[in-house]
Length: 264
Image (tube, rainbow, N blue to C red; front, top):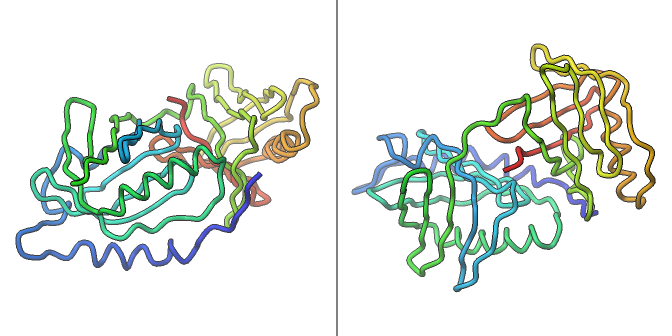
């Protein structure tokens, strides 16, 4: 399991980048100065073509450009922030600030390719229905699809990382942990990466109170059991939840942070 400390410096510098990126110059305008079909939308990244090679995106990859010019997203492993200015069909991104979490090789390879594409800064955008294509002057292309916000209940939330406020870990290879809240049954169920789990669940005022966990009794590799042990720490207590479009974050009373994304 890869483990690296998040680059808090990058997150601290983001407001400065935003301040610089929203300045207006001759012949250009900030995103916030007018409406655009690419702003205010949660765009899921589907694929990326760089130097003629196409890669399918990890399910956590997305891009959002706010009407105020602020950019947020996930490159397949790490979260990033930036600014954007629009002029006609052109989208110019400012300096990218990114966290520094280690992930499986496939996710990191996609992220490196996406970073190369964004290094150019300038894209031509084309919106067709619910699809967005961003193309660099060199022909590299990012394909995205408009995604609606995921509801808390009934969504399969695939767990992507575990940690605390300062450190995050991607799940080990082979760990397919997920959670589903059933409003009618008043339960939370899913997989802990090895065993299945279920428990009573009550949602109220931004918190979820979970009962004692009921699990199956399989034994798995040590790394999977470590993941399971961490997730079991959420149960028989109250966790705070934050729902942001298609990302769910759970924080336990002892500071454990679980990040999950809605399944496509």
